[in-house]
Image: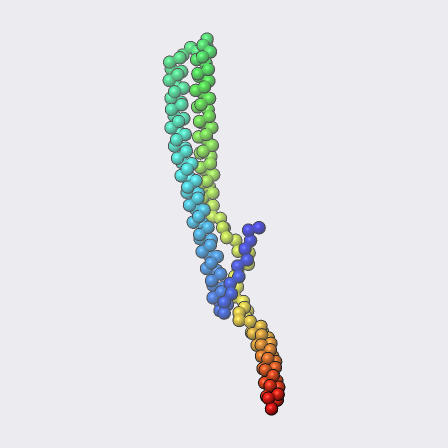
Amino acid sequence: GSFYDLKISSTDPIFSRDFAIALIEELDSHQRAYNDKKVGETVQFIVDRISDTEKKLNAAEEALKNFRDRNRRIENSPSLQLEQDRLSREVSVLIGVFTSLKSQLETVNIEKVKDLDYVIVLDPPEAPLRPSKPNKRTIYIFTIILGIGLGIIFAFIKEYLDNCDDKER
């Protein structure tokens, strides 16, 4: 899914918590700005399309009106009836497009007003009880193992050197 686990490690637990809070706030702010920009672009596109469609609709309605003014009696002329149907269909299509664009503009404007949570925090950042690093237990165990290892190596070297001295005599 789209869940993220944020882990911040430092020697200061309060700093880790404050840094996580600041990071979450900045991420939410960035997401809001991005979505506002996208909604603004969408609104501008729809407004431009409404303007273009309205001009085309006005021209189509004017053409239909002029056709009807010039041709009052079209009952007996199939070509005139066909032309009127074509002009009427064009006006109907443009009305449908115009209505759809207006509806989409209202929907986008409603979405713009909504205050959405873009970043939802399931568990807020908390300061840990103890620092996560340095892990003192790991350091102690590593130091003991290193000391024993170095002791064994020195013992072998000393034994080797003692054996070499005995052979030379």
